[in-house]
Length: 338
Image (cartoon, rainbow, N blue to C red):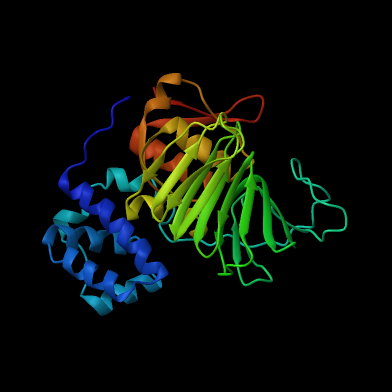
C-alpha cells in the first residue's frame, strides 16, 4: 500500500482535464484557450475533459466549455468504468466552493509581533475553516487562508505585515518608494510589485511561493544572519526551522494545486494519506487519526472541498475500503475494513 501506482494514460488525461476545468472556472486567457483547444484535439484528452466537465453539472464551466467545443455525454461503455483516482476527491462535488469571508474582531496583540508605540495597526484574522480577502489602503490585496493572523502597519516609508499564524497570499501594488515586507518566523519577505504566498508551517518552517515578479527573503534564523535569497515567479522556497531549504521551480499545475485553497479546494496528486489528513486538519475542528500506521503511506489523489471531512470519508471507504469510527475522545479514527 506504500507504493504510488502509475496511472494509465486515461488517468493522466483525467488529471490534466481536472486542472483545465479549474482554470476554466476562474477564466481563461486567450493563450490558455488556445492551449486547451490544442490539448483537447486528442480524442483521449477530450474524453477525459468530457467526463470531468460532467462532474461540474449545473456550473458555468459547462457553458464555457460548450462554447469552445461540444462536450456530449459519455458512451454507455464509458459510463460503467469507475474513475477510481478522480473519485477520491469528488464524492460530494467537484465544484469550487468559495469559503464565506467573515469579519473577525481585531486581535489585541499577536505573538511574535513587536511594534513601535503609537504606530497604527490593522489586525486581520480568520477562524478555522474560513478565508478572507482584504484590500489594503495602498491598493494591495491580502487573501487569508484558514486559521491565519496578520498585523498590518504602514509607517516610515514601509508597508509591513506580520504573519504570526497560518497562510496568506499577497498581491502587491507597485510602489518603488515604499517596500512591502512580510515578517514571518524570523524571516523577512520583501517585494515591490508582485504576487506571492507565505505559509508558516507547524514547527516554524516557512514556505514562500511566488506567482508573479520576484521577492527577496532574508532569514535571521540561518547561519550568517541576514542571508538573502531570491525567489522568482513559479518558484517556491521551503525553509525548515533552522533555515535550511532550497528554491524549487514549480510547474503551472503545481502552482495551481498549492493555491487551490483560494477557491475553497484542496488538491492532492499522490500525497501520503498522513499528509492529506494533516492538511485537512487545518480546515476543520474535527480530529482525524489512523488506527493502522501502515495506512499512512497510502497514496491519495483528487479534489476536495476544503474541510469537507464527510466527502473524504466517503471517498476513502468507496475507493480504498477504509472505514471510520469515533473513539472515546471523539476523534474520527480510520482503519482498514475487515
